Image (cartoon, rainbow, N blue to C red; front, top):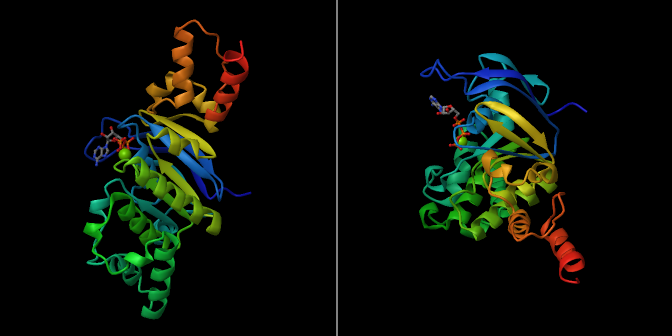
Length: 279
Ligand SMILES: Nc1ncnc2c1ncn2[C@@H]1O[C@H](COP(=O)(O)OP(=O)(O)OP(=O)(O)O)[C@@H](O)[C@H]1O
Ligand SMILES: [Mg+2]
């Protein structure tokens, strides 16, 4: 199967910082319908990588291929349409006076005819469960609701790929859950490919695969269980430890032998039950 995202040996420097590579020799492939989490410390190149995938930034070396189209002057607008982005700050993403106007704005910009626009706006807002708020002012919504409207704005454009660049990081746990659940539902319905840049362990745990960035390089990739079994090293990769790993460390300090393999919360409960509490 052809990957939907293919990066080959990407190098990138920002023009105002010729000294340092923001991306160095990054190669990766993502299949259609995958959910990918990108983790890494501040400044490791995650956002730069995202902007390379949607053609906002052009690499100095290497090739970007999205949905079989090479990123070049001819394809750039098609590629930007295929890749939707949702950013961190919900308040910086609104242009419309009402929720409905806001979602319509990008469609209007793309010259979608009015009748079709109305249909697509309603469908997108219904998908993120915000249609009841269509005539509300965006400023008066909760953080999670604002991000769901931002997602509707992207979904209305019918992208193949959606990139969430720390899109849940300013939300409370409830707002995070709302947004992640919404993306999951849309992903199932439309075979969307999701790339989520995150420091949140629960969000990363949702992914099929995790990519780890460090100083502009892709240093690791694997399924969540593989990556999470790195234990304390995870913190140095830019993630908080999952709760079962934290508990394992605490038990180890008390002299209790714990399994090396990664334990989910359920796995942890089973193990505690059978190996520790029954003794
Ligand atoms: N517009 C810019 N001009 C110059 N350098 C930049 C610019 N944007 C980012 N950089 C630099 O490029 C490197 C990668 O930055 P990037 O924003 O991609 O990292 P990040 O992993 O997304 O970080 P964060 O977790 O803080 O969002 C950093 O060293 C950063 O300082
Ligand atoms: Mg960033």
